[in-house]
Image (cartoon, rainbow, N blue to C red; front, side, top):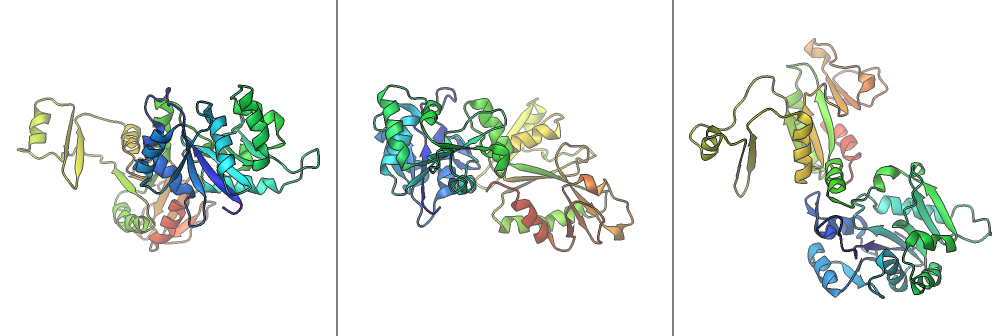
Length: 367
């Protein structure tokens, strides 16, 4: 990001979370590594703001020794102390600040905020000191914001007075406040995780879910067999859930897991070096199954085959040559896959070109 360094704030004690936020698993990796990867680049200056050297060493282990860590000076002053330390050390005139518990505040939102630096000047006819987003509820987000180095004396003055509230420091700065709705997916990108409940919700939201719907014998499974490798080529981790209208059994008689099930276990799990399976010995709603997969952190995209009555966006598969009607109104679907042109406001993709739909789906993900 030209002219702007990045500081990832992670010096908090994580009291409400109950465990270190930087170490939390997110999309299959520690949260600190996930955040660092959003900004890392050949010429990028990215560092972590930490409370002490011990935490700095831990961060470097989590990220793989690739990240620089700056210990807060003075220590124990909360995020404001981390912002001041980062402004003192960054090479660029501007600093983008993001909290480690904001998984979606990425390079894209940083660049959008940087564009506002060049927006019309403040009422005093002077350039902005900071650019801060504001959510629909009126809440300012100074921990996902851009600051100029000239902010440092004012912020340090507030530290010296013993006031560590970042929002109070904004009163002494020329701030460009940006409504979240003016930013691409702004409300979601300002999501933060303060406790276990919000962490679970963020992990669940991290995986996008779509339902591929069509009448039986239209070719859903065959199409998915072609779509999955097209998504994998784009680096998307894919989970697929199939709705079966008949009873099924994947636990074979004679296996240890089958013996556990027969003995009355409500859940039986089995794993090896290459595979794992969980048998839930009772009915479960599709929404709960999706939630379990989301919480595993192993998928970016969950596709359900079927689930026409589910709450997720639908991809309509329509094959005119099958002689069957459309399984839903195409205008109510997120996308349509067909062997003919369909008159609809939804995007339509050729059934013989799964890579086109893969590009559409991967473009909607936070990867």
